[in-house]
Length: 249
Picture 1 (cartoon, one colour):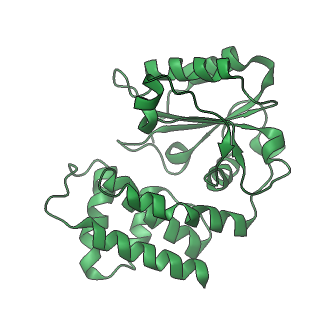
Picture 2 (cartoon, helix red, strand yellow):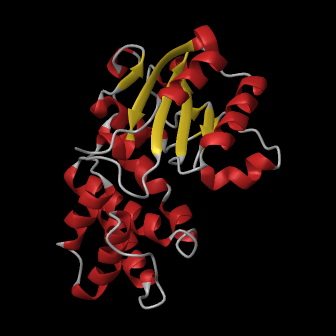
């Protein structure tokens, strides 16, 4: 059986910190798309009645810094949305709170995340509704509207330039995310990163397959992460071209 993520501490943290404004907590991401992999985060969405206060956001950050990726625990990505900001649906949606360990240095310097527009919520909410995995509260469909397909498509494409800027520092995730975007644009479904890479490998030119195959194998824990013997950029550039072609077709 796939590994089940430990989420009790996250549920308790959210209930204690947010109180009556908390409407629901939902698991999504790898845990609901085929199971956690060695490098998978625990992805959680909280739906709230009203915007979190600065003090609440700071408490969440301070507590998550103590447990996310610490002492053998998995990294946590926690997002909160205000129900009225996403229902009825409009684009771009607003993210009320975001914790992710790629921002750990900022948090440790005292930066507290504030509400901001986030196109990335379109695929995230789509995954939450598909997973239907409440940790607290009603089924997600009782709180969230489905994302129109055209908004899902434009949301996943708009972040590609920013992804490419991270290729040298986060090679594996960038390659797998590009493969997932291509897969979603072509098939209309959001797959796990390894399943999306498997789909893309069958369609890549032969010269690019070793790079994406390495990213997938590292994600699955089958190989160590190294890129000194391969050139990831041509593969990533090919993926961005087919993404553009798929989106415009």
